[in-house]
Amino acid sequence: MADRRYWLFKSEPTAYSFADLLAEENQTAEWDGVRNYQVRNYMRDDMRVGDGVLFYHSSAKPMAVIGLAHVVREGYPDSTSWDPAEKHYDPKSSPDNPIWMMVDIQADEQFARPVTLQEIKENPRLESMLLARRGMRLSVQPVTKEEWDEVISLGNG
Image (cartoon, one colour):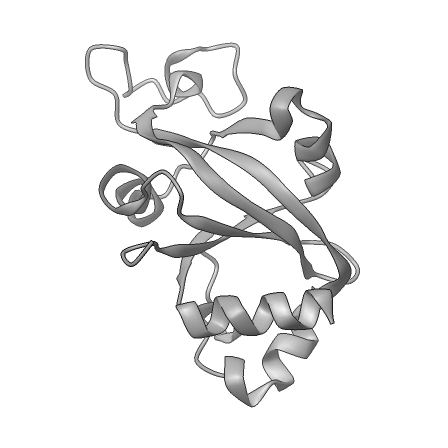
């Protein structure tokens, strides 16, 4: 797939872990609750079925890429944003005027070993990775093909 893109999705394992994704029916889940415009735009404009996903556990010890997934449904309105009972409710969003988007992802594999943030920061091949940058807090980030390949090599090595 020549135009395949690669992404890193962050999730706190206490909120939603890679094990949770593996336990889902068909190991597939909606990636909802994103409330950042740049990430919304990635989901709406850039993500395509087949794009690769590095699943990253944030706010964990250690913080690390745990496994791989891929996009199985392109961006569509995030219905949790207009449901007052939902944690990520946004009163400005509605079915007639959806502000927020989500995609569906499916698990591919759990790494043989986690690839820690520290390891990523210390690897010269990953020095330009957005995750390694100070202050980079986006929950979804683009990843280059070279970074993708290196992280997979480390996780399965």
